[in-house]
Length: 354
Image 1 (cartoon, one colour):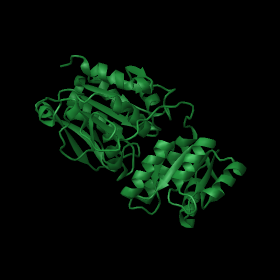
Image 2 (cartoon, helix red, strand yellow; image 1 turned 45 degrees about the vertical axis):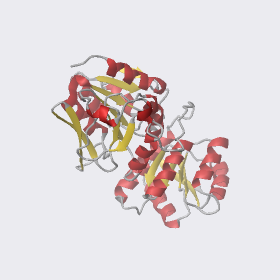
Image 3 (cartoon, helix red, strand yellow; image 1 turned 180 degrees about the vertical axis):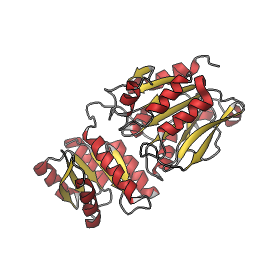
Image 4 (cartoon, one colour; image 1 turned 60 degrees about the horizontal axis):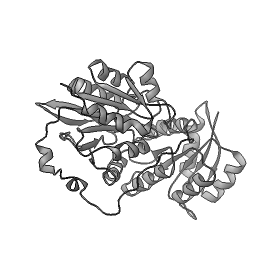
């Protein structure tokens, strides 16, 4: 049984979360708290396995509490946040501080049914999350600079490049931190990269903007029809599937709705399957930490079409779910720890392919 403590200053949210979580046979809400001071006492008394945490609370905000908690009593935390751009920035900071996942608060513009399911899944993932490995994450730069100009690689030069090779990356729980390790280690002249990271709407843009400040490659939230050019990373927008299509010698994004796959939109499988069809052996597929099975079948499809496939190893995953299933179905050709994923991508993209 997964014991959960719900921390939120809204009585309605506490009631809703308690009701939805207690419907599950493997989850029990052992207590609630309206602020971090009460939460601190109940953590000591009730010893919960997972904490759900609001960020906007009286007396002490959620980020301050999370920082203290991870320093003195690290434990799995799922942030439950309102769906606004400002809150998305705070939520990303919470992930940096050690939160396992970020979920939209009930009552947001997002479907309440979807939120309930995602909170339940996040709690289950958090209950098995690993806290025994430390990975350094680059801090964002304080000023906005064009890194690529320093490398004598202007945007005009990029436009003359072809985009025959492509890299596709899928991640879920723990993926935001994993991507903050992998992407800054990549050079500016790498083939175009597409990414599906399971995140709520609005959050993906803030996440892409933050990554853009710490990477040599350019990072943005994908839009329909974007050219996946060299030195460019495109992140699927929350609540939309992202597919890859080939037109001539170039790859482009297709952003669309459609039903969720594995309860996710965007889905890693949807992206990987499209990459298998569009790029075949010219693609590299990477599956990172995450709960569930999304991406395993799509990665296998990429492998069958001649793509090189890389899976994150168990020891460096926050949750060894998606890479595990991919490995079990025979989709993974190369297994690497998180610290070696960037190196593996670079090595593969330097190889000569058709």
